[in-house]
Length: 130
Image (cartoon, rainbow, N blue to C red; front, side, top):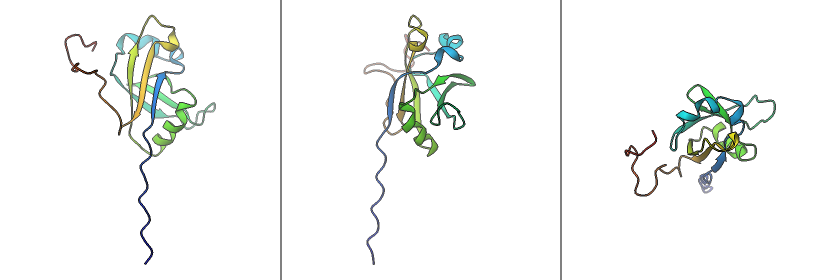
């Protein structure tokens, strides 16, 4: 008998760290006061987007904050299409920055996702901006 095929190797983890495209054009400005480090956001594929076949929308609840930027969205869109668990969370919020740089996010494969709190910090601490 022929040897069994080798098992498929898992895809390498995906990671993006950067800003939300179009943040100033959607609900972000109105919700800025509700955004904080560690907040998990929802990614939704926008397969019918006429401008970008790999478009990935970013939401908090029913409110759209913007999109993943072109380029980094290609691999993340492919993984979402395959139902791979992907986590998107806020890394930094700076209301004083220009609108397109007010919210920095981190998108990771669930297999490499790490806690949002730093070493020595605990979630829910008194100074936590929740």
